[in-house]
Image 1 (cartoon, helix red, strand yellow):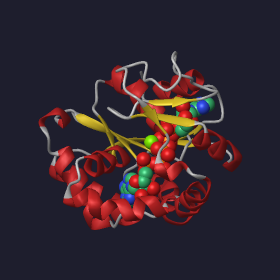
Image 2: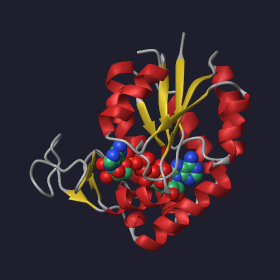
Image 3: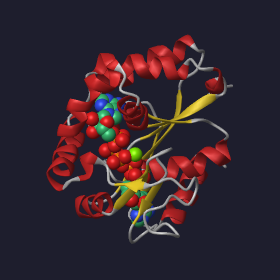
Image 4: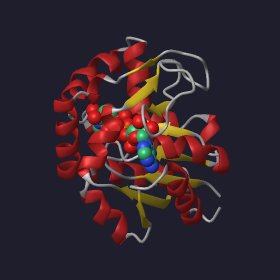
Length: 216
Ligand code: AP5
Ligand code: MG
């Protein structure tokens, strides 16, 4: 049976960090909509050009573009057992589209870990984040520093600060989350798949809770 996990939570709460860690345990591919957009921007594709202006402002990329991209990704052979979704869905329209798409594959959203933290924690995490250029591995100058400053521990590539991690864009991303994505908390709670996890604790404690929710 396929297993689909949706990691829900505000910008900077640790979705990408946790997804990297639990992808190994679950054996499911980690699919981050933000990473897919950033790859398209790096490769200067048509989709990348369309997405970039929204991302730089901290706004959501339109649903039709986002849904088409995820549909394509979830249809790849490595998703035959399911997937670990990070950053998608982010609107009710996307959640409904995902439900239909997974039904086509004979699956459904099985688990929705909803990770929480205060707004001040989110801002502190985003302002200290360093991301790897080659593959998007995630570090924090204080909470998860790389062994060598500016260099990714995993693949040795250069670390950079995401364009959308500057202060005014972070504020907008958090506002957009509360307006457009927070309604998904009720959406998944009603469907019985939501589990709330306190994300304001050390990385390994959050991972342990996540694995418990997933029965691992
Ligand atoms: P996306 O890339 O998804 O960004 P986001 O949701 O804003 O989330 P982040 O990646 O910023 O945070 P995260 O929760 O992954 O935290 P992380 O693990 O890095 O989206 C970017 C943009 O793309 C959107 O604004 C939008 O424009 C577009 N987009 C993407 N998906 C879309 C969609 N579905 N629809 C429309 N548009 C879409 O951790 C953050 C920092 O904290 C790191 O430095 C990390 O080391 C540190 N950290 C993590 N956990 C802990 C911990 N427990 N304790 C201390 N530090 C920690
Ligand atoms: Mg992320």
